Every structure is written in structure tokens, then in C-alpha cells.
Image 1 (cartoon, rainbow over the protein chains, first blue to last red):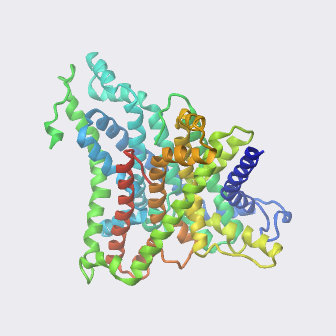
Image 2: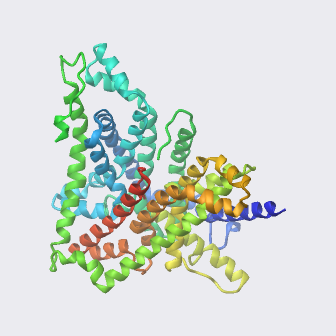
Image 3: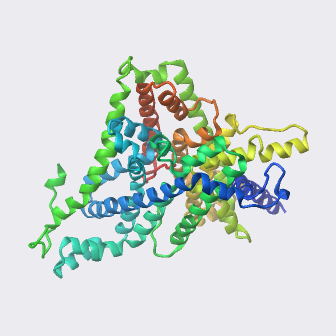
Length: 264
Length: 288
């Protein structure tokens, strides 16, 4: 009897916490397709707000996708070879390098953005282009790619693979491309999903780095929360959810798959 | 220096083309360039600019000596600490329950508790507005039930709720993973020795979870210290450090002070994570 009471108490508590997290998300999705949120769902369902969002903010959505893909490309080119080299070299140098590139996760985005602004303010064309936002996103997401690939590489015998390929006459570049990269695939995939998801939702850095002509989706969201009616803001949020939910589901599936090392 | 002094394994086949050692250096080159140009150099610049104002280096001391900045720092630290404590308590109760019982709907509950993991701070702010804002659910319910519309999204309670919203999913994942790794034999031994459920929790389960508390607590604290998007969306006039940095920079154009405060904020967040890492020996990081 006592166990039953404790079980029910814990269940109610956990359900309440889950409701706290999920109810506002559902409210926002509903508000985005409700004709008049103030009058409630009874006022009818409509796609007019989603269309309005498209008219107002399509450009920010396209730019966010562009930046996310460019961030992914940059973190792949920079991060995967680096993860391999750090894994092979090991030792104090590798630990120091890993430590330094992980710092952007500890330092608030606002501080990094301010630092970038102070350093590159004089480079007008660069500062005004979307490439400036890209640099912030790359600095912020790179550690996720490097650590994800390193986690996979540390679980396999890279040295033996490398040496056997070398003894067969493969040069370093071929060994990297044909042996290391295929073996690191789960880590590259997990890192890529994390990078794209984080880039699409990045606000703290982007808000400081953007110009009126380089607004991204989260910047547009902040704009709509401040100045648009609740239905439009909600429809915009709905569009954002629709973009990141598939990525989150893919991440979950990847994490559940046996053989993938657990990411800390 | 050890970079060059280290003996490097030699491979057959590197006679033609690139040597293995040069290739590894080439692999690290893009990282070195990106990290130097877009992170290390800007950070150095930030520290220099922080000391370039009228007051020079003492701008850094102003964080603690000037009443306004000190009050902000205290506010931010208290809010972050409260968020951390509440998230840990909530995540431990829910985590223990979810890992100890199998029942229909459990997977759904876990999914709901971790779903907001990737929400940016601005979206979290909007969630709080929908919950407790002027057109919010709480206001709607309270005006029907008690005839008075309760609106607290734009106050410190709203900010706290927002921080809680993005902390719970992160903390709960770490704690659930730690609970899963607990050795059930220890609990059984304690029970066999006559310990009641309360004593088992106090003396066996909670002590074993301390490393997870330290690790996830540090992440929650550092993230809450630096959270900008949520405070920005709620447009609170509560002075938290990221908002003050932002207004110093944009409205007052007090760039040196903004830089000094950013360095201070970065140091506090980094120190929390470094401290927890040296305590637990694991590698952790904050995000968002």
C-alpha cells in the first residue's frame, strides 16, 4: 500500500515536470494553426499564419539552412582530419589542443561574439556578410564534431589499421580517406547531426553578429516574438520545430543503435 | 615543443609522397588556423579591450567594486545556483522513478522530458510567455479559477522558470545515465542489513550519484550564467550579466566595460566547468 502511494506520487511528479516542458510546445504548435488564439481553437484551424511567416521570413529560413550546411562543411573539413591527428599523436599536445577548442562550450556565446566583433569590425565587407556569422557557428560547433569523431576513433585500433594499410603501400592521404574516414563514420554522422541542429538554433552569437541583411531563423524568431501577433510568432516557431525534430529523431535513433559509442 | 620532439612511428610506404608526420601536421593545420583566427585572437582582443576604457585595468575590478555590477553579478550567480539546485532535485526524483519502474508510457515520458534539449534560448523564452505571459495558460486558468489573472513571465520567476526549462532535459539525461550504472548489489546489501528505503537512498544511492550531480550541476550553472536568449525574449528588466553586457555594448556604447564584463562572465563559467571536471575527472561541457 505504501509502495503504491509512493509510486503514484512519483508518477504524478514526473508527469507534471513533463507537462511543464511539453504543454507550452504544444500550445505554440496549436497557436500557429489557430485562426484566433485569443478565442481559442474553436475559431478554426488555418494555414494563413504559416503563409504569413513564409512571406515575411522565408529569407531567414533559407539563410539559416545555408549557414547550417556551410558550418557542417567547414566542421567536416577542419574537424575530422584534426580528430584523426589528435588521436594518433595523443599525449599532452593533443590534450591541450582539445582543451582549447572545447573552450567555446564553456565561454558564453555573447562573449565570443563580442570578441569577434571587436576583432573584425574593421573588415567591413566580411563583417556585413553571412560569412561572419558562419565563423561564429564554426567556432561554437567545431568541438562537437571533433569530440564525436575522437570518441569513435578511441574505440577502434586506429594504429593497427593505419599500419596495415601502410604496409600495403597506401600513402597517408589514401589511408585517411579509405581507412580512417569509413571507420569513423558513426562519429562523423553523430557530429554532423549535432552541428546542423546547433547551427540552426544558434542565437546568442548570431544576435550580436547579424546585420539587418543577414538575419537567420532564430534572429527572426526573436524579432517576431517582440513585434508580431502571437499566431505569427507561433507559426514561425512551428516551422522551426518542423526543421529540427527530424534531426533530433535521427540523433536518438543513432544513439540507440548498438555499436555506437556513448557520447558524453 | 613536444610536438616536434615526439618520436613518430615510421611507416613503410611513406618514402614516396608525404611522410606520415607531415600529413598529421597538415591534418591539424586547418584547425590551428580557425582556432587562432576566430577564437584565440578575438579572445586576446577582448581581454585587451576590457582594459582599454577610461579606468584601464580597474574595469575588471569594477565587476565586484561597482554596486550596480556587483548586484548584477550576485543576481546572476543566485539565479544560476537556484536553477542548478532545482534542476538537480527535479531530475533526481524523476530520474530515479523512470529508471526504477517499467510501465506503459514510460518511453513517452522520457521523450517528453528530453525533447526541449535542442531549443534555443529565444524559443524557451517564448514557451514561458505561452505559459505565464499576458495571453498565457496560467493567466487563463487563474482568471477562471480565482478571478485574478496571474502573469509572471516577465519577472524573475519567469526567468527562473525559463532557465529551469532548458536545464531539466540536460541534467536529467546525465542523472538517468548515472542511475543506470549504479550497482544494484549495493542496495540489496544495504536492504539485507536492515536499511529502510529512506536510509538506502540517503546512504547508498545519493552518495553514488554525487559525481553525476557535480558534472551536470556545473553544466547547468555555467549555461544559466551565460544564457542570453531567454532573458532577451522575456525582455525582463532584471539585471542578469548577459543582459547588462548587451545593453552596455549596444545602448551605452560602453565597449570596454562590456568586454571586461564578458571576460568576467567567461571566467566564472569556465572555472565552474574546470572545477567540476577536476572533481569528477570526466570531460564535460556546456552548450546553448
